[in-house]
Image (cartoon, rainbow, N blue to C red; front, side, top):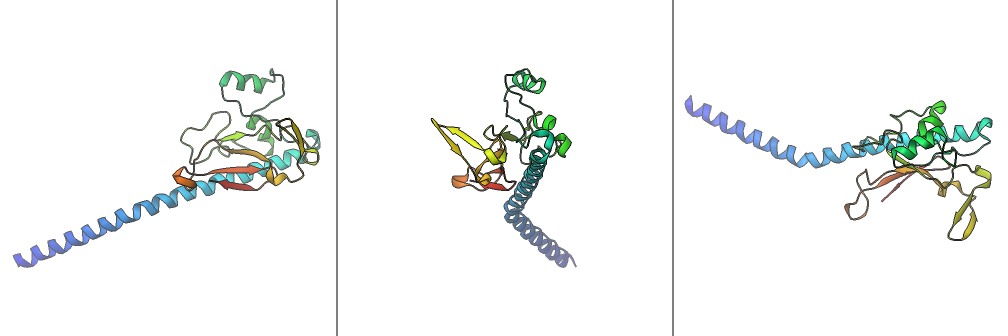
Length: 186
């Protein structure tokens, strides 16, 4: 009987070793799946923000203009922007879009370890702010361009390479476009 017990213990140790090796091989796949899930949540957040922006533009009280949200990196300027003391009437996303369903949780990408308390995980593009979809004009490098295709205009995007993928292992980031769709850029 003693020999049979030793043989059973060896079989058990072999099975545990095999399970350990399989678990080690599966960890990268599990991590990749978790990262992809976080990116899917981020894309969902951006699409919902896009719906809120479209509702803002459609509201007659807003003169059919895009919301006046500029990304302000320091807290002093952010406080001035919220109180309206800057030269332009800039707002934070919650102040501007909360009536259209935007919350701080919606502004936070699950892949972002340190979201901004005022802007969440997204940087807002000043390009479209204050323009109407019909008259969108882009001023750049000494020229004025009229853009008729809103699918090229970025409204907001991740503040860094927060998601897996991309070229040379740098990761990727998601971009909300003015027509409401979301792109993933490497």
